[in-house]
Amino acid sequence: MSFWRPSFRAWNIHSRHARPLSSSTTTIYASSTATRRTAPSYNITLTTGILGYSPTSLPVLHRRTYAGFKRYTMDQALVNDLKAQPRDALLFHNGESKPELPRIRTAYIALGSNLGDRIAMIEQACLEMEARGIKLKRTSSLWETEPMYVIEQDRFVNGVCEVETELEPLPLLDALQDIENSMGRQKLIDKGPRNIDLDILLYENETVAHPRLQVPHSLMAEREFVLRPLTELIPHRALDSTRPWKLIQDYLNELPPPQNPLSTLTPIRVGEAPLSALRSARSTRIMAILNATPDSFSDGGVHFPPSEAQSQTTARQDPESDAPLASSSSSSEYLIYLRSKIQHFIDKGANLIDVGGQSTAPGAPEVSVSEELSRVIPVITMIRSMPGADHISISVDTYRAAVAEAAVAAGADIVNDVSAGLLDAAMLPTVARLGCTVCLMHMRGTPATMSQLNVYPEGLIPTLAEEIRERVDAAERAGIRRWRIILDPGMGFAKVGYQNLEILRHMPELRRWPGLEGFPWLLGSSRKSFIGKVTGVTRPWDRVFGTAATVTAAIQGGADIVRVHDVEEMAQTIRMADAIFRY
Image (cartoon, rainbow, N blue to C red):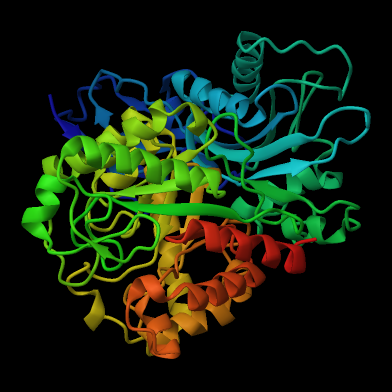
């Protein structure tokens, strides 16, 4: 029994099951061992996976026998559908049908919640969709919005996801409503409060008019909370097939400006307020640096176990002044000191603590995964055990997926990857699986080579923006939700002195760059060498005033988080800068 794949050069297929869009005919031939005297049975297998038609095997109406060949004439519209499919999707099989292959459709689902932990509800709904075989391909940002129609209710969190599904529109609606019911939704008032709301906005290019379902969604053109996230995904698509020149972006542009502009939300830790990157009156978050390393450029050995610090570095720094100091004499003294340092960070205003176990200073040796884990996990465990640290978010500063996973299991909330997933191919898929927030920093090469990769012929800002946008795209392809991403321009990483000043001057431009709108930004200029070059201050721990100036510039430029060594001094600086620029 033989199989044959036909040429796609000149086809026309005519069947009573095909859509009657064309009456023109062409010819296809299926070879066989038949002669003029034999007439074997032939089936052409066309599956719902190819065409979305039923039944599985479509009988051919017109047959004429030639010497050794069969001629089949079919409808041109069906031919066009076939040509769009992979060649391996179609087989001619003598007397049998090919197993049915499901057709994958693309749809856009609106996400909404204004009861309980709104972001957690939306993320749970996303997991429920995937558990039912509805694959999330991309997500918009999450937007906090004022209620419409029924005004006396809490603010909503809204977003949109692009999904792939085998389900037809009504079965897809059934699946979404089943998710809502399983999550305890009770619809008491039309357009009133709800813990989760899932609506089909678009389904392929189809129009659905059914008592239970209208696609495109009937009210979406008047809703900024739908158009805004949808524009992040498909700004140049038309909503109405009869008006293909009017795009989704056009509908959004025609809406009147809202009284309270929408802002994106980026969750960090359960129970803590998310980042609101577009809200003008937001408070800047303080990320305290805690390097459990012997060789970081500024604070190497300060927060490092004493037995290792004594063998790997000759200098330590005083916990209050950061002046050089001999290493502690015992592990117990070190633990007491470490706990007091963490408490100092908390008391002086830190919102986050960034724990690192691998120095990224130029020339620093690379340590093993087990060594890095032995440095960061005890620190994370200690922070999580401290009664006064319940509100503190923990970030793990690592570019290794194995370290990130262990750190999150120990209590970390954020993965802060200086390579944005470039140094470990497993990092982005791991973060996607963990479901935590990630900070993607711009860097070129490795910590050992980045100093030679600081030339930007097309301009620093355009190149930086495009390269970090590529990492955002990679993160989304790996399955990381857009609302779980923070960006960092990477000050001092593959940038020389004046280039860091250029970043500070052009932060507003970076925040508005196409494809980067709405993301929160983290800036880490603390004690960097470019500050020393400008101010003439040689020792990193003496660069407090210069750091304060860069922190102020970062806040003016729109930074949401600043990463600092000197928490007490920078907390005062931030409060003053927020009072000036964020009101």
